[in-house]
Amino acid sequence: MMTTRDPDCIFCKIVAGEIPCAKVYETGTCLAFLDIAPVSAGHALVLPKDHHPTLMDVPASLGGDLLEALGKVGRAVMEATGAEGLNLFQNNYEAAGQLVHHAHFHLVPRFSGDGLRLWTQSSYDDPDEMQRLAKKMADLLK
Ligand code: AMP
Ligand code: ZN
Image 1 (cartoon, rainbow, N blue to C red):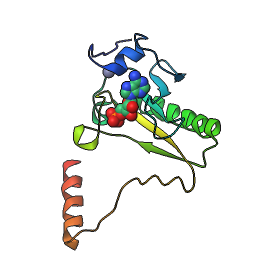
Image 2 (tube, rainbow, N blue to C red; image 1 turned 120 degrees about the vertical axis):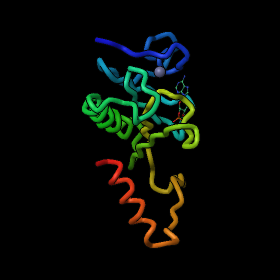
Image 3 (cartoon, rainbow, N blue to C red; image 1 turned 90 degrees about the vertical axis):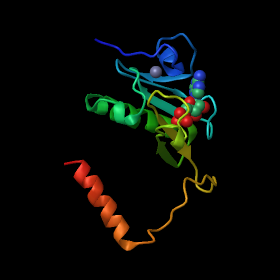
């Protein structure tokens, strides 16, 4: 099988076993390990082993493997930590907080009343803007 790797990428080095990790799950295409700076204990990362910088670069053919890994690891994160909930986070590009440019998914255990604020929501000033943006995206997807 062809593998893609970036020699400067820390997650590629973890995949290759050159840097240690707290490994949770591994398949032929995916790896999961605990985040070294967790939101809370048990915060796990799931990634394709091949180097793809962002979610938009990950081939759809990996979707099934990734979804299966996310489901299995997500259940294990919840059971191992006793979490009552679970968030899936995924950052792309620096503006969105991506620090490691090897696409990965964060699984964060959640507890009622843990106080973690995810995001603040707003509204559209111009009611037409929402429809205009939706149309622009839909046109791009044609
Ligand atoms: P992101 O901001 O989505 O790119 O997240 C990158 C995550 O990787 C951060 O939450 C880091 O704490 C985590 N991280 C960086 N280096 C390591 C490492 N060697 N082992 C485990 N997690 C790491
Ligand atoms: Zn990489």
